[in-house]
Length: 147
Image (tube, rainbow, N blue to C red):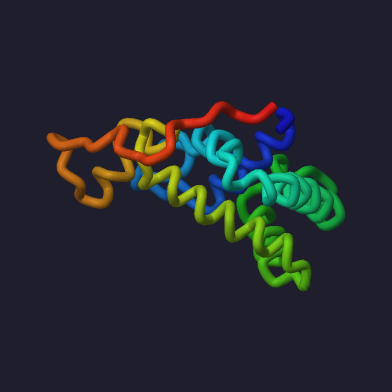
């Protein structure tokens, strides 16, 4: 994943899980760290190329509609691009978006050992007691970010 794809991925996560005054969003939860690591897991090996292609398609759609890359669009424009993509007849694009939604939520509520849920923000929001953090109980160790 190159730097531009990573920026697009982070921007998508920020629209999936925006920070709206409560201080609990993709940025605060460190989703930028968890998404690339999750996509590096072998279970996503077959889907990873399609997700990277989806990132390119979202950039192309943003450029076509608003004259700039997805990351340069304002929130409402990004939402419009994502809404159009969700309604697309392209099944692979829709699957890639649903996977990113899943991984964004996993980054908020998952084990912090995998790069998300920074400072246990998601667990605190869900009411999990601070005195009993259960990190490290995952069956699969964190993976390295793919090249």
